[in-house]
Amino acid sequence: MANKQLHIGLFGFGVVGKGLYDVLHTTPTLQATIKKIVIKQADKKRSIANENFSIDADTILNDETINVVVELIDDADAAFDIVKTALQKGKSVVSANKKMIAEHFEELLQLQQENKTALLYEAACCASMPIVRNLEEYYDNDLLKSIRGIINGSTNFILTKIQEEQLDFKAALSLAQQLGFAESNPALDIGGFDAANKLSILLAHSFGVITKPTGFIFNGIEQVSLPDAILAKEKKQKIKLVATAKKLENGKLAAFVLPQFITQCDDLYQVQNEFNALTTESTFADQHFFKGKGAGAFPTASAVLSDISALGYDYKYEYKKIFHQTDTELSNDFYLTVFISTDDLTKIDKANFEWIEESHNEFNRSWLIAVIHAEKLAGTAWWRQEGVSLILCPDAIIETVEYKKISKRSLELAGVV
Ligand SMILES: NC(=O)c1ccc[n+]([C@@H]2O[C@H](COP(=O)([O-])OP(=O)(O)OC[C@H]3O[C@@H](n4cnc5c(N)ncnc54)[C@H](OP(=O)(O)O)[C@@H]3O)[C@@H](O)[C@H]2O)c1
Image (cartoon, rainbow, N blue to C red; front, top):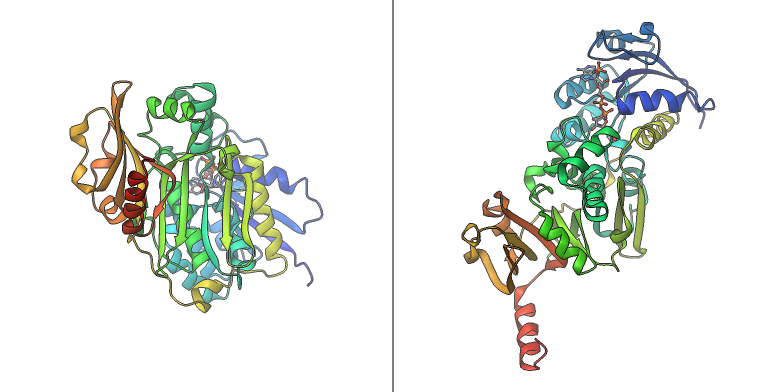
């Protein structure tokens, strides 16, 4: 199919916007030129001439010669207004704004259909790692059983620096910010919101489930303590923020984002710094493992560039899982094996556990390993308090506890535990 000429209106000239500008100027084969750049602060010093910039969104939105809007700003509400208007005006849009997309997924889907335009957002999920188009296209017929991975570059960077270089949390976060890996509002990263926004988008493209992050359990890494990291190291494990979605035996879908202990035999063990990774498990292909840079100017710009290039041959997401597969429902009807550490045992509501497998006191902290029903995590807040950290054990999901109880009992009888 012939490549059409793309006239771009760019919103944002920060880490990613400037990255895209540089990358486009070293990709002469792509028939795409930036016609105008809209930014927020008129008097900010820029690396290119002032005549390229405007603070008036309409200079792009009302320009009929601009057929592609690339939205790379850090304000999700303003981004939605821009993207909505651009789609209504029949322009194709590329965005990296996961918060905006996760919050308005259904409306954006409708806008694309009504206006027969395309919205592409590969960079919004795992930056340089081409996962959205893969989930959408490759796993069309080979049905997915699970996706699991590290989908936030800055928390992985912070955890790596804490565990490998003994940096404290603040220093690691500040380094992530300096390198352009963190969101402008770092609470989005460390509170788990960014990973949850991405999982929400991935759920639509992998399982056809449309949900906001409030529809599943998620947490970030703020409560992970130094003693937790020391313990992980002693056990030759690492702690990572992991997003999981898994088809349960009852046909429903378990989904959550939580910190997890990662053993050496897990593919995620070697995923360090700002890298992201995702393992897919499907009926026929079995496992695939994707890895790539999940943050930073050029890696993110490369995904934006790939979307721009795809628009050149009129590519759009068909949302096949949403429109052509049977409805999949999210469910919290499963159990998780969790590690909990605390500076004060009275903060822990032990009545929530099915059973406790181990409990200890070490490093002036109490910690225990227990099995809990996911609905009890979704419906309570005690485990989110300051001074309490909850980290998933490896292989944390248990579908039915009866099996586990029997197997534990038989091990006890055999004198193994
Ligand atoms: N950084 C990464 O590694 C990365 C990775 C994946 C996805 N993303 C996503 O990419 C987007 C941009 O991130 P970034 O790191 O490039 O942010 P950034 O460095 O903070 O830059 C933000 C840019 O947006 C502009 N802006 C803010 N509000 C605006 C408005 N209302 N109208 C026009 N321009 C506006 C700012 O203008 P001024 O220059 O005038 O302040 C600035 O140029 C975000 O959605 C982010 O989640 C980032």
